[in-house]
Length: 290
Image (cartoon, rainbow, N blue to C red; front, side):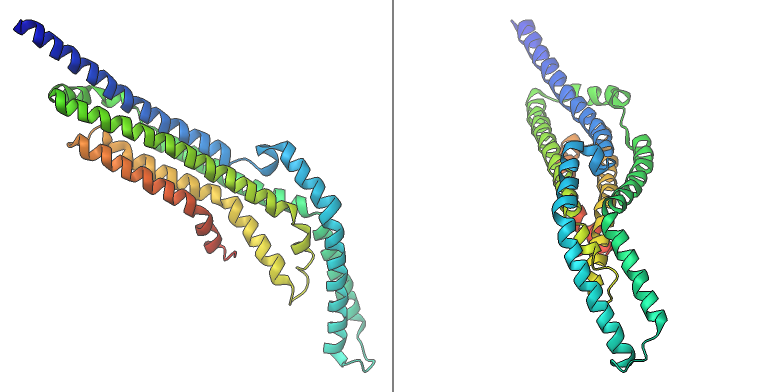
């Protein structure tokens, strides 16, 4: 009878250990895979992420927004010319020819900016894409975690535990697994929300670009351009957050107190979700975009 009870206890312990190691192994696999997915997603330009949506946004900008930008540009250039004349000679008739050439040059630049808005937008995000791709290569090599390499020591630690502690640990690892799923949803929300914000920026681009040549109105266009750069480089800050998080949780399998390590992982996960949602504000604050 005693042998039967011992065999049942051993079977329960083996079952619990297999479940715990399975949870932990899947947990780390998810993190490693998520790093690669995030690097791929944040490294895409608006056209690469969804060419259909980008085409619609481009058509709206070219057929709806550019005519409005043309009216605004006409007003800004007329205002610029009148201000130039008044500031120079207060309408006394000694207007210099150079000032006229200066105004013509500004007109050329303004028209070029409005008609090539999408070229400028794509260039900004290609720059951000290049930064993200180079960063992703470094992050991918530094943060990958080989769980099988540390599994042996962990199994030995689990075998020394009693059934009650193993059962509690199983609950903890299952809870952390659910937290990882919540993390995946948060990451998706950050990535999709960022791209939607980018598409909104792209759709209205010709209007702020129409104001850039004027000293008084140009702050609108300058702030718009800073916002584009901030969105383009937000992907870099997202990668930094994920890289820091992945490095921090590498100690979970080798920690002396496994319970503390698992709950520390949960805390890191919550902090990661918070930091991912803050990357947009951080990027805009760095580039003074508001």
